[in-house]
Length: 381
Ligand code: SAH
Ligand code: SF4
Image (cartoon, rainbow, N blue to C red):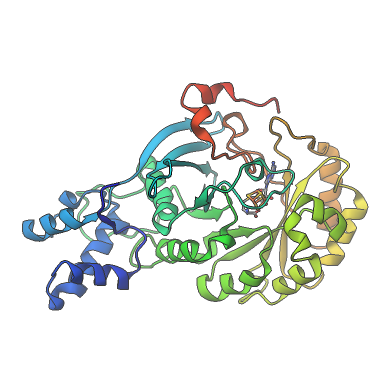
C-alpha cells in the first residue's frame, strides 16, 4: 500500500477535511472540492495530472498525500451473450493477502446493469448459493464498492473523453444505467460502506445514477431494512426463495434469526413504498423444493397488499451442488399463478453462465481461477 489517503469513496465533508489537512487555504476549499468531485465522478479521471484546471502546485500537493488510482484488473471475460465479468484485486490491509472480487455487467436493450459486490465471500451460507460456500474474508470499503462502478465505466467507455468541452449531461445514453447490489456478499452486513458508495453513485453533481435505478438485494437482515429506504433511498429486493419458515430456514439460514413474519412486516414498513416504488421479491426456482403450484399460491397470499414485483430466477448450477433448476414448464406454470393474481413476475433470463457470471456463481477464492484457467471452469448448464 502507498500510505496515501484514498479520495474515492469519501463524502464531500471528508474530502474537505482532507484538503484542509494538507494546508489548502480555507477560502479555496469549496471550489477545490467542486473541481475534484467533477474530475473524479463526472470525468472519471484516475490521475491528478489529468485535472487540467488545478495548478501545478496543488497537483503536486495532492499527488504527495492522496491516491485516486484504480486497482488492478486481473481478468476480464466476455460471455457469448455480451455479459462481462471483471476480476479485481484490491490491496491488502496489514498482513492480509490482497483480495479479489468480481463485478458483472449485463447489457440489455433498454438498460445496462452493473452487478456490484459488497463483501469478499459471505458470512451467510444460503444452501443454493456458491458465494455462500466461501468464508467471509472481509467487508469491502466504500472506495472498493464504488471503484467497481468506476472501473466498469472506464472499460465500457462510459466516461466522457477527457477533452470533451463544456457541460456534460451525465444521465444520457449511458452503458451503465442501473446498479444492483447483487454480487458477492450481504450488503446489509456492510451497511455503512454500502451507504456511502451508493450516495456517491447517486450524487447529482457526480455519477448521478437515479436512486430508482439502484437496487439493493438482501437475504433479510430485518433491522437494517428500514434504514435502506430512509438513509439511502434506493429500491429494495428481498431474497425470499421460500414461503414457509421450515423451508426458508434450510435455504436461507438467516431466516432462523429473522423469520418470515418479521421480514414481511419490515417490507410493509419500507419507506416510500408505493405502486411506483415496488419491492422486488427474488425467488430462485429449485426443482421439487420450492416450485409447486401450492408454493406459488402461498407466495401470492404472503405478499398480499405489498406493492411487489416477483422475480423468478432459474437456479444457476455450480460444481458440488445437489440442487437442480426447475423444469421450464414448471417455472411457466408457477409464473402463471402469480400473473393471474396481478403481479408482474418476470423470469430472469440467465446471463453470462458460460463465464460463471450468473447469480450465485461469483467467487472470492480466485487464486485457482486466473486467466486461462477461467475458461476451463465452465459448467454444464
Ligand atoms: N446477499 C444478497 C445479494 C447477493 S445474491 C442476497 O442474498 O440477496 C443475489 C441474488 O442471487 C439473491 O437473490 C440470491 O439468493 C440469488 N442467488 C444466489 N445463488 C443463486 C443461484 N445459484 N442461482 C440463482 N440465484 C442465486
Ligand atoms: Fe450470501 Fe446472498 Fe449468497 Fe446468501 S444468497 S450466501 S446472503 S451472497
